[in-house]
Image 1 (cartoon, rainbow over the protein chains, first blue to last red):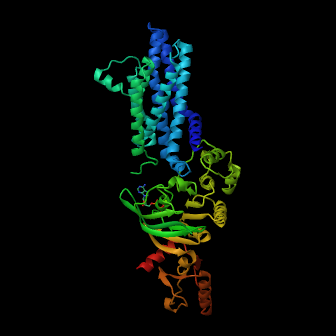
Image 2: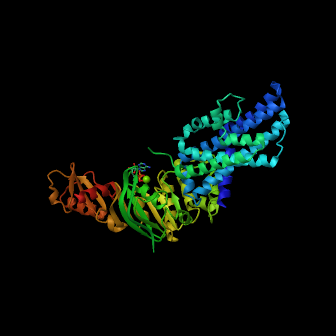
Image 3: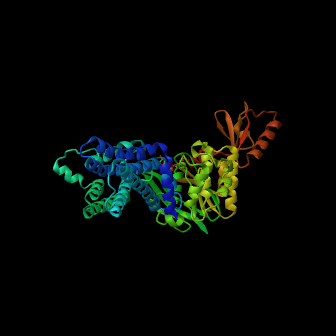
Amino acid sequence: MSLAATYRLGTRLFWRDKAMLFASVITPVGLAVGMPLLMRHMTTGGVAAATSIFHGTLAILLSITAFMNIAVALTNRRDQLVLKRLRASELTDGQILTGQIASTATQTLAMIVVCAVAVRLAAGVPLPANPLAFLGVAAAGSAVLSLLGAAYTAAIPRAELAGVYTMPVFLVCGVSAGAMGPIPLPSWLREVLDLLPTTAVVDAVKTGDLAGPVLILTSWAMAGLVAIKLWFRWEPRRS
Amino acid sequence: MTAIQVNGLTRSHQGFEAVKGISFEVAEGEIFALLGRNGAGKTTTVEVLAGFGRADGGRVRVLGLDPHTDRAALRRRTGIMLQEAGFFPDLTVAQTVDTWRDFTAAPRPRDEALGLAGLTGRAATKVRQLSGGEKRRLDLALALLGRPEVLFLDEPTTGMDPEARSSTWDVVRGLAAQGTTILLTTHYLEEAQRLASTMAIMDEGEIVASGGMAETLAPRGGRVAFRLPAHVDPGDLPLPVTVEGGHAVCRAEDPDLASQTLLTWAAERGLRLAGLEVRTATLEDLFLDLQRSAR
Ligand SMILES: Nc1ncnc2c1ncn2[C@@H]1O[C@H](COP(=O)(O)OP(=O)(O)OP(=O)(O)O)[C@@H](O)[C@H]1O
Ligand SMILES: [Mg+2]
């Protein structure tokens, strides 16, 4: 099946690009494991502080391993006319994008699981009380952020700028989820930032309350799909 | 049966009309050459036919289907060699072909595709290490994977060495012999002459000449040029010539025959035809000729 083929291709390319692995695996995993470890040993809060910051770093994993990775990969392939070549094959546009999004989401989910186990072993952060809900939310978050990363490529003019254009997204998502430690924010801003898909995932994991976060993630997914339908570019801009 | 029908096709890029209402047809199993200089609109035409862009005006059918709206159905029956497209540089040639076989419903075996493209010895090489001509061959291998009924080749031999070029011609002829309809674009009149039975010449988005290869070229065939001997009036020559900067240029269907006539005439008068040059028409000659006849 062709969807399986594009999924396999996406996964193969993810692990093959050594330079990219540093940015999209080593860095976020390092942060998601390192920050809780620091909190555990450097602060009086101990395990509670480590747990809280680990939940926050999920936003980093989502915004880097899912969002940034797919945005960079797709803009590169768009500008190098690889997407154009893929479209010359029997694949449909939907298969090309869905396979890639599913692949990126899977790698992200795998990273999240690896980090959850690593912080349990290294910093004593307890495993999620409801593992199924945790996996479900992490999977949904990974999928939505991958989808949004694909949609976001429309805003990136050239491949060289993909990193620069995704950086603010990463910063806003990280700060808003408390991944960089507690940063005081005005309450109106807090309310806006709570609507971010990454914050929704972190909130769901922290509180165990799923209804609100699922609604937020669904809305983002719809927005992402519409944006792709309207603006996704398969070829570099020539003007 | 007509495999490709183009009727009054227009297509603009950001307000610039690259194709201005062209029409042609390609019969099933035929090789059709689209000739033209840079910017003539060849790629624009091929990309519309291959379903990459919608026709702004006119009607386009490939195997009876609209290439844009029926893209998915048509893709299974067509192969495309784009003028320009990227590869995954870290995959090897074999991995690239295997990846594309994965995308194809009934693909050729990998070795068959590599063999057709003359890449058998390069299977283990990373794409980033391939030369320009080798990449072009890999392009061809991917275009042929699905055993297409209609094949679009946009400048298929650009960057290939003479050997690769002639083996590509053999492949193209072989496919046509098996019933594949082929539309190719080229800058080389020779390539068109060797492969195609019908052709169209595009210039600035319009077709300026079209029809059977032989009939279209016949009146413009080749040319014989030589320095006009002193004291010879061009009107005395046995064949009509034009004088271009001291050179007499004779256009003839059969330039070899024309040169013999001229040499015999010269020998009888004890004249020498210095700087004699006999050649079959090039695309550039054709254009000059077309412009002349348009005037
Ligand atoms: N995406 C685009 N945006 C703007 N202009 C374009 C675009 N694609 C093509 N053009 C213009 O349209 C005209 C026709 O281009 P096209 O690529 O079809 O020519 P071509 O006959 O294939 O030329 P070549 O032999 O150089 O490949 C050119 O003048 C080109 O500048
Ligand atoms: Mg072209």
